[in-house]
Image 1 (cartoon, rainbow, N blue to C red):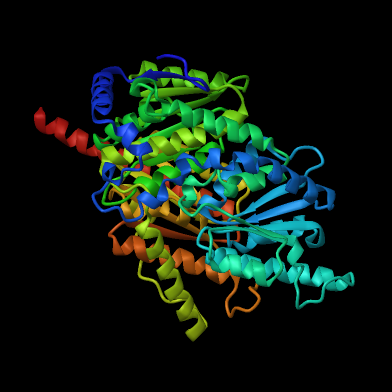
Image 2 (image 1 turned 45 degrees about the horizontal axis):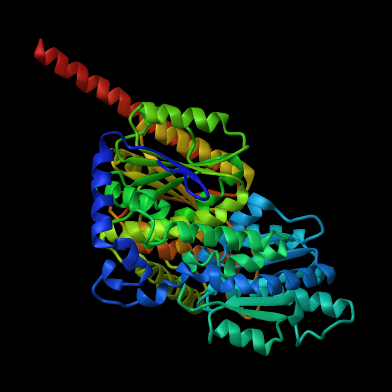
Length: 575
């Protein structure tokens, strides 16, 4: 494979190589890449609804190139004003790109820390609240629609804190809650834009409206937080444009990084290798959180979809089934010895692997564009509409109904009986995947415990697993869970969410909102005949998750004993 302008790509497809090469040849003849750049909606569906007006991501980096100077000046002004922290309040596409920047780059010296708050879990909100000084914090409200319930609820919480801080220091009265400490990023004409105007926000960044949230990382939604951290926004934009040029129609499909990756994912996905497993160097591992949302929400519909598997524990090659395609995102100069060894073993075992090598962390901006382009191409091969998210709205409506019930009765509705963990595991088998849906306050201890559970399931069942914190996953993989292939097994883990956090102006708390979201999603999964189990963890969260792990091991041992008994009986019969 020839060298790309940004990344080097090596492909190991084995017996699948000929199929992909034939598709790339056909792609050149049918001008698929040119049609994508021309925004031809018939590449996906005959009906242009929400397609032609969702392709602004193709050129947004070029459009915002002239805004780099003003963005950097704005960031310097925030730094000079003495802000110590920036809290980004957003969900899904509004938050995951900035989260990748935060984890990969961190804040430059002298610039404020960035906190990405994409959760209504009371424990997480308390953590952020305790870590900041509200009087010296800038808050970003990021919402494309401008009415996201999580964003508005968290705004009410922090606006109240800012008002108290101002009042205690003789600043702005409580009626004008420190508007200069808030900025908004939203589409034109939204409720959030009106709120920002009425409350006197410091500024509002109006994003191009022809970009869906999950394709918005190289727009204001990603670049404003990056600038506030002191990241070189000019380099990010340049790398995004560089990759866009590499994906232009004049580039042969076999040398076009986005077209090649999308063709592999689409073709292999529709033939059964639908578990797109991302392996990344340690410093770039958070990229998977963003790519997971992009693939799941874009392709998981009409009973089809690519199942992104990210941050999965490593196992020996025999643990993986023939439902996988691996993509290795390798950062030059990182601690790559372990991942290099793992990927070589996968290739030797005949698994399809695409290696993509990044020169430095700024090449992630190019990867954002490459994966967006690839997802659009994969959508063509899957014959789905990659720019809508019909089942995300379904869960939102369920949440709204649950909250109305809470307002009326003062309690959450009774729930139908869930499957047990044993029932869930009894259905593990080839081609399936298990999604861990954790309504838990994020922590390194919880991460480690969930990782141990995922490793056990992978090794014993050869089962691909995903893991997402609620309610974040509702804005990402939630679409796949309900609209994608009925191959998922779903395990909700729910802590007690105490002590709780009130929402000013609402009759319910953040904990109640989070529980309503869990109930709403549970109802959606059951209505679509998904296999779902719920485990209430109480306050001893990690110990309770370990209990699930113990139960799963017991189930594994029982299944093994039964297999041996049946095998023995069959053996006697043959004799």
